Length: 184
Image (cartoon, rainbow, N blue to C red; front, side, top):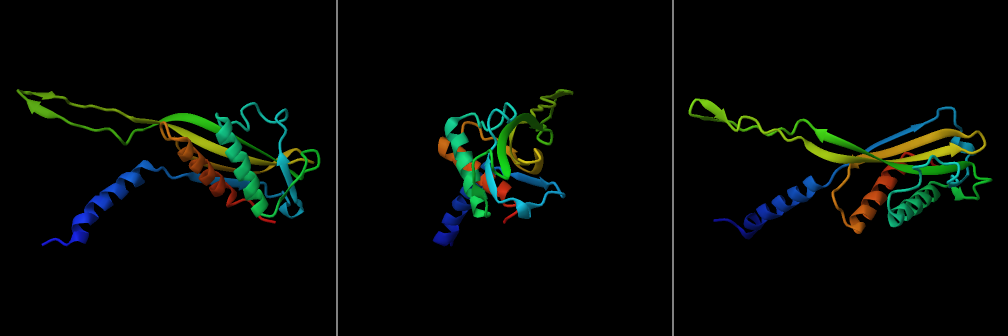
């Protein structure tokens, strides 16, 4: 006899497995200039658009771009940095989203059947193609105009996610990237 817990547990586990398989984890990296003295940095500002590379500070949608601005500012303030005008800030901050096409070669389903002396449906290869997105956040020493810190989060982009899901993933990516930003 099965208990109600055992009967109901299997569908719950299957549902959790499906949800978990639909989520992609971020690969997070950070690098800092070992010569940079973060103890002297106190303030930050956004790099003026005229000074930033053309693709910077644009996530492809105004609402998501605004979300990244807000999340980066909040994250830096939590780490002890204060907003300032760009002409006097210690650090200038910029970000960009790179999109690259990729495929997973390990996903090659194989099916073959011997039929009347020959293989039928011998190999059906269909690479698992996807778009990978990488959010990069840079911190530049304004006085020396040199990159002192770069963090990135990379993951497969979800196909046709809702605005809420895009917003959640952007917030999660920024938080994971800034987790390694030096605190004051």
